[in-house]
Image (cartoon, rainbow, N blue to C red):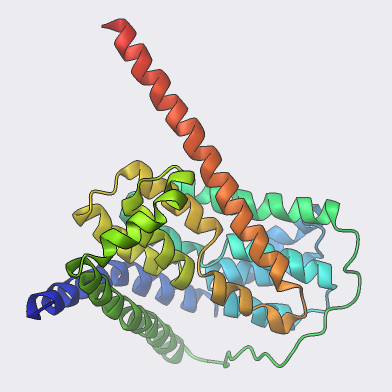
Length: 315
């Protein structure tokens, strides 16, 4: 390990921050401004009539829209304004675990090369299917949820200038937060590479990545995404695709896993103050992610094998 290690790590960190920042800044800015317009209210009114399919009241559309357009913290702020049962809050939590911050996280996934329809089908499909299944299977949870000491943290802003400034501030903070995590992360990864620890780590994770239908060089992305989130996992994946030869197939499989199960510590703990059982929430995400990725990998490999056999037969 020498100066070149730090230099490469810093360069990689700044490049990744720039790449993802070009997505995060404009999306955060636009959505922050939209929050002060009638547009989000209009979206809520459109969605409210279909909430009964998921066993939810019409007003549950509020946290779902906030969570998908903004983030989980905004969604929790929406939940706090509603009186709902434990079961209803749990269903919302599961839906948002699969599908939240959809604009930013879809943008970074597209940057890696994952197809748009794959991201949307997996995230919204899992959110809706899980809600329907939980509503049909779980017969309890009828008590009114008792919320802990959680604050929304939003402030009232009036006037075009202050709204634009607030949007700029949130967007800039979003990129700053990204840089604070991504730059040190890239330096650490570079150090691990130069010390040959990354190779050892990948070999130790080989059985897991193989089970999920991926090669072992995908393991750093999976671990990063599981711990710190999809956007930061994308930062590692962008580097891995360029430097470590991660295939488009493995990148897609990794993102299928991570859209179902990412930032599992933060995204699970954040729901504790809402008075719902968080351990089942964690296991639902993990089990669904494993089963979905294994299934997709199985049929993908089978399709490739069939295609290869047909090509051989034709020759």
